Length: 454
Ligand SMILES: Cc1cc2nc3c(=O)[nH]c(=O)nc-3n(C[C@H](O)[C@H](O)[C@H](O)COP(=O)(O)OP(=O)(O)OC[C@H]3O[C@@H](n4cnc5c(N)ncnc54)[C@H](O)[C@@H]3O)c2cc1C
Image 1 (cartoon, rainbow, N blue to C red):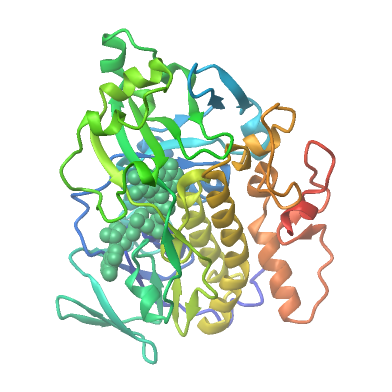
Image 2: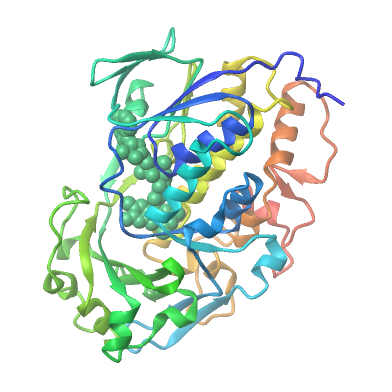
């Protein structure tokens, strides 16, 4: 049976500005929905970031729905989150993910960014797969968009026209500015240096083989301190990606850019005289040491204007402490894929983008704010926020904290149905509120919707 919208559905010519994680994801979602997609990327990907990226179940589910060949991403499937004592390295809070796939239907993948990007790019551009393969034009930096007629101008002088334009151009988004948003932002209180350690180098030197734990491991992050080391294994465990946080007063990298000359190991180790010697040993052999600029952005009041919308970091840049930046970009892409599909798109781009904003902005904003809180309190981090029996557990607001249930129990299709029903003045009778099942409970018995709504 054809859907009620199929009659009015039309194929759109879509321009995606930015070919990063979000840009490739939305190209996949929209080609599958039947549209013609061109991605415009300012670079040529030669300088892609060499670090890990988390893809929890709420991101992984879409990779499977889109038939992405996840094995190409060479992931580590996470089994645990471990929070360790800063000085001794002893575990202080562990969140086991043994039943994670059983509970949420999908695994928690840890990818290397370059592999994840290549995996998504193949899926977007290859001939096989549903819909028309997306086109990619590199060395196309968006300079301006005419919001009346959908004309994009690039710095290379070229112009193109599209029915729908997606700003997936990352944290420093030009499209954001073009649609009139001037972010209120401030440098974070903490700085971050990233280092890579090859597992074989660590093992050869007799250091702990952290790759065997299949875990995201955290040192510190308790008691309101900014010091924290985050270890995430990727490339099947062969690479250990370390994010090393410390107070900005001890080193300000706000104006450094990723991709410059590598920093020295001495600079990396300087803030950590008291750190557990096991992980300190790993950092001592760290390579490709690069600063990661951390800016705290206040939520944006809107993410769409005319035929343009923002996606991923362009629309809701967040601190890395919930490991949800990539997942939120993937969810944005999924929402656009659903809303512009034959089942839902009735031909009105503006109306559809306003539903996109209604679906995406509150959820992404909540993760954004929870990510800022988790910067100085690891108990706010999804997973650890469920460890209420841990003696160091404390969160700012028990009702309102971000939970694994809220992230992974969310059903975007139900959310879309509810919003569409409301807009059409129809009652919505399913057992869901904002995509969260009404009967889904936290381990303490509180319904998740009660916590998620705050
Ligand atoms: C070092 C590092 C580690 C990270 N680790 C994690 C993690 O563990 N977990 C997690 O979930 N997230 C992580 N993130 C964040 C995550 O990578 C981003 O949230 C995610 O990539 C968002 O995707 P995006 O497409 O919005 O932005 P990006 O992937 O940054 O892509 C933006 C793209 O737009 C292009 N572009 C910019 N301006 C223009 C323009 N004017 N015209 C054309 N193209 C343009 C850029 O060149 C880039 O290719 C990390 C980020 C970094 C830098």
